[in-house]
Length: 70
Image 1 (cartoon, rainbow, N blue to C red):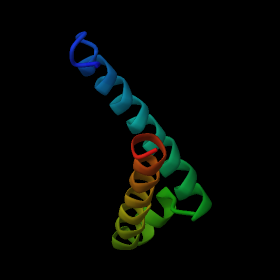
Image 2: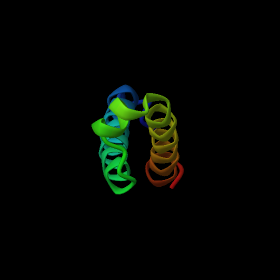
Image 3: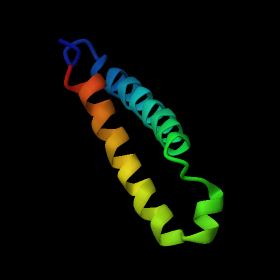
């Protein structure tokens, strides 16, 4: 339906923008909650990278579930 009336690309761009913003907010909230700070980054960069990777992955999965798969 969206493809036929030329609205598919704008719709997909809108969904992508919403998803990226929601991931950004979720990562920020989760990092704060888990105390993943710039101080930790300066003290133990490898731990910070690992924790941030886990947080980002979790945030992306959550957004995919909430926004895309619903």
